[in-house]
Length: 255
Length: 255
DNA sequence: ACAAAAGTGTTTATAATACACCCATGA
DNA sequence: TCATGGGTGTATTATAAACACTTTTGT
Image 1: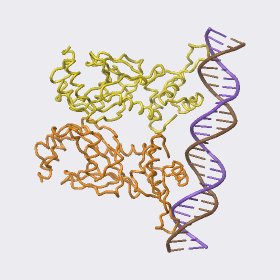
Image 2 (image 1 turned 90 degrees about the vertical axis):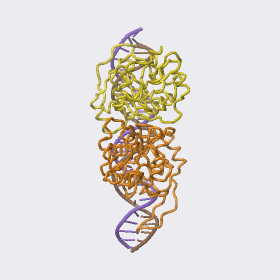
Image 3 (image 1 turned 180 degrees about the vertical axis):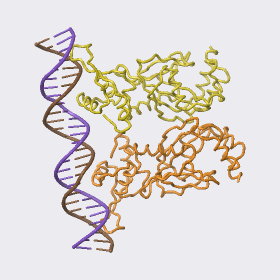
């Protein structure tokens, strides 16, 4: 077991990585009318944590976050925002860290590394859960989606980071392409509306939502979806990414 | 000269401070219808920089920023926001750093410290310039206000940080108590409007601005200001801080 | 033909904008 | 008394919200 955790090439020491500094990633996905975050279950325990990592000596900090995201999702994430630096002195329980390291049979270098105080830069990534299968990291045996509304207790201040992310998208939904990142390429107006309702936590008028969205000129209407229930088939839409970005540049909000 | 820079008690080494991590502060002030930032002129040179510092081993990161602000202004700053982490590998020109350290006659410990790669957390503080006299830090001989519109070239990515701050308040002015932090306790409606116009970079209708502001219920009207020009005297206002914060809690924007 | 959901149109309420008017002041 | 800036009112326009009507589909 000890061998599993002393990954060759990982070299968790201050020669390879910047000490005292970490990145943690809140990876949000949307499915079944709910927001989910991707969390890791640490090996041989019931402790859950956010995916995160460290910054190589010669690596931009954003690249470190992207590297972690790539490792967990296999994807090159396009929506990535720095949210907040969590830098309180007491944010990590070092007794808990000790106990974990012993249970995992970590070597001395690894122990020394994790026993530092860490200041963590929290990132927010938005992804479509259908587009990949989550991959655990070397310290975890599970990597899976948990709904924001029923999130287990996470280690350290990771629940706080998720709460921060929840607030963040609630505010930024007016200015950011969350639909583009969270939804599949093609979607119905109803699906898009539901996403906004879930994020905003309030009902929106169907007719007005449709009119507003179409008026923005950032959606492309496709053929109708002939399937499903005994009723009128909805159009499918996708984002006109060029216009979407033009729109964002212009600085306007919507909804 | 060397002695000046090896400040007793400052101990710039990785025993006392977290290595590789710094805080930089964009301190904005408003005066004469302009926005200013507080910058430092490094000793024996024409190089300007933002005030900044390092994080003590047992210090919260926000406290490190507040400490730097207290040292530069003598004030306990109430408006302080984390803006962004500047973490590119090439953000500091290490040749330039070497040259500076030699010119200042820094000792070996200090040299080793500054020759690290630094990732910097940029903070934004808003202050009323009338409320204090700026204080240089141990590496500078001047600490003064420079207008954002005519900012000298600063070292490293510090101009970028100021640009970030300029954008930041332009967006956040709708949600944040910038008036409360930037203006003197009592001010006229015209003064407040001018501040909004400078930050938003557009003219606002006098009558509508006044109505909107008063409707928010966050201003207290005081006696008229009997002075100045050959015309009607304006009322003085101050912020009702309680209502201001209630208003912010409610999450609404204005203007 | 009917129920269910989609798409569009119309009315009403609310907020933003433009600008007109009168007031107070000191030269 | 007049020029100047301050305070308030009103008409107009634009946007948001509420909701009604029609269309399309599969059963």
